[in-house]
Amino acid sequence: MLLTRASEYALLSLIVLAKSDKALDTESLSKELGIPKSFLAKILQSLAKEGIISSFKGINGGFALNEGSLTRSLLELMVAVENKTPAVFDCASSQEACPSNKASTCKIWPFINRLQGKIDTFLGTLTLQDILEQ
Image (cartoon, rainbow, N blue to C red):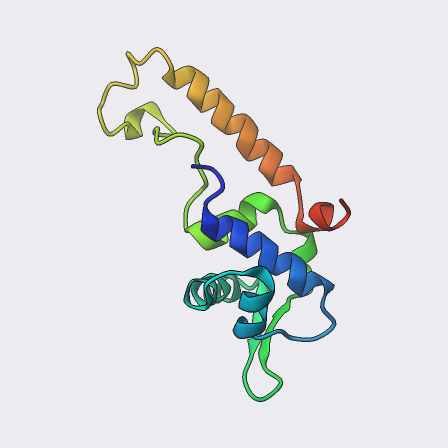
């Protein structure tokens, strides 16, 4: 599945953080977005690990969007959360990586591969800033 809950929640959180003038804690984000706090905490940790957001400790702590993150592509953001390139289908990206070893005879693999390439290109051209401008 292309847009998992983790990717969706990450994008929603990044939008809220981008619009905020201060760091927001996990509990505030969780309540505002209706996302389970423990799941959101894992997503935010992944985003912080990849340098997309920063975390701050203390009474005024929380998370804030890092400079330059608005221009990161949606593909980059999704990979940061998923730890892999999002895929439309559970199909290998190359014939050699096909788990069933049937990609060379598969009639739909070339179509799926081209479709995935177009989606990756599209997600690679959209940025967080593009979402904010909608």
